[in-house]
Length: 369
Image 1 (spheres, one colour):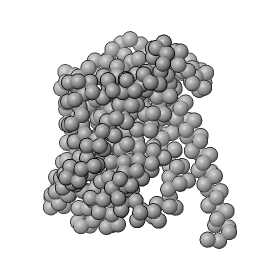
Image 2 (cartoon, one colour):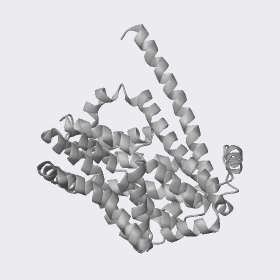
Image 3 (cartoon, helix red, strand yellow):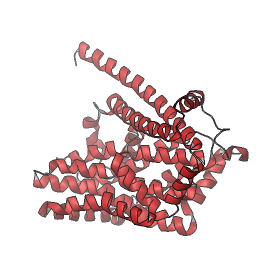
Image 4 (tube, helix red, strand yellow):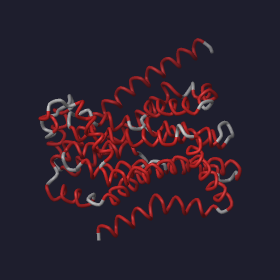
């Protein structure tokens, strides 16, 4: 590489580091603004939120539908953590919503697969890879949601772990006593706008923008030039693939980015569908870093929800990753779905519309009526 090119690369990386830091600050500010806005909402709005999420299955599909629409589980989970921190949402109501967000985020990789639709063989592999993320999260919900509803398995475990972080019980209450360095600015912005609902919408937009900015800057700083070189090493061992998936996703704060990188690799035969699955499992764990960042406030329920998000994905990984037979099950289903979609493309489009939009919308609509 020429000295001029090296200098240019170094300059670009420095810019990426600066943008990454600014994006992180924007993310913290946006979450804090969202919490302040949620705490200022009137009682009627708060009651509507509580009624809408009283049914755990409605909560599940709200999380799924909203995530599918805005294409960012990181934004949705961070917003849910903020709602819990503000006291407008109970931990038990929020858990199914986070599970739904985990399913909703898988839409992106499936949509990426559609870009290969003109090449039947590549499309079959790509759609199968995209489906893997869907199937893994759906299986995890099918296994863990009944345990949560019956025994409060995840929420109770998360609260016990959260207690280790909060030794003073007085800190587990109101948002007012739990401030971060951005609070003076967020309170000023909230008072200036003086309409909590508009402030909430602006803050959600800022959370989404901060995550996208952070994702792009981290990718340019760390992954862009190295990914092609190291992808040959990533997929040799399922555990190493899972570790790489975890760290890549934690870095870019978006499982959609890392799983969407996998789909073209599978489509172009650089990675098999089978070998890509552990990486996707790891990506699911890595994406929980966003909720952890959003739970920087010493509010027990917010920390517990961030832990629920981590435990849900980590337990799902522990169910499938160590056992080759179980690990092969989602792969076989994804390959069958890919084969069926190549034969009749209507199946693929129907699956996307029904799973991510029509069924969630109809269930939410009829439940509220």
